[in-house]
Length: 304
Image (cartoon, rainbow, N blue to C red):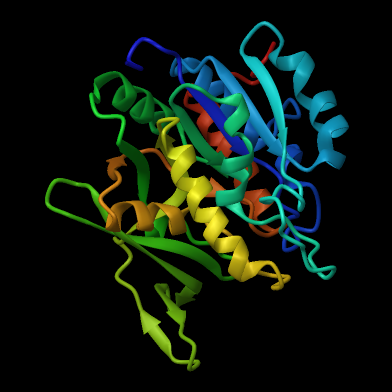
C-alpha cells in the first residue's frame, strides 16, 4: 500500500546541545556554509524522498527558515513541527522545573499530523552517509508488511568521539536480522585504544567494538505513530514531575516488539557515521566532509 509513495525525512532538531555549546543543528561544516543536516537532506533527495519535516523548538523557527527555505525551495517539500513542553495529553500538569524537551520519542510523536507516508527519522547533527538513506528507501520499496519497520545499524567502534564519552543503544538481533533488544549504554569511551564504559559502580567494562549500535536512523510506517502515542501516554504519567526524564525512541519500540505489535529489521551500510557531540568534534567533521568531496561523493556547493 505504500510502495509507490515517496518517503518523508523526519529530522529531530529540537535538542538544546548543551555539550556542544551552541546551535549545532545548523552550524556550518561544509566549504560553502553547509551544516551536516544539509548533507542529510541532499542524500535523502537523491534516494527519492519527497518531503522533509523539521521538528524544532518554536524559538528556532526563524533561524531554520532563514538557513534552509531558500536552498530547498523547488527541491523538496518542507514543513516544520514544534516540540513543546506542553505537547502532552490533556489533564497532565508539568513540573515548573522542566526546561528541556521530552526526548526523541516525543519528537517523533509531535510530527504525526504532518506525515501519512513511510518516513525515515534521523538526528539533525549526525552524518549517516548516502547509503543509509538508500537502504531505507529500498526497504520501503521491497517490504510488504507495514508492521515491519527498519533501522540502520553501525559498528560501535566507528561511532566514538575522541573528545569525551558518548551514549549508544547497543543492539541484539535474531537470526533473521530483526531487532531483539536495545540496551542504552552511557559513558562509552576508550582506554588504551579499546572501547568500554564505566558502569554504575565506577568499574570499567570492556566492549568488543563490533557491536551494532543504533545511531537514531529509523524507517517507520505511519502506523508507528499509534505505538509512540500509547507509550508516551503511559510514560508521562510517571515522568511529569521529573525535570530530566526523556521519552527515548527505544522505549515504545521495545514495548511493540515484546507485545508482538511490530518488528524492526536491522539494515547495514558501509558508509561512515560521524557527528558533533562536542565542540571539538567539529574539526573532525569538517575534515570528513572535505575527504568525501575530494573523492567525488559531494559537490563543493550542495545547492548551487
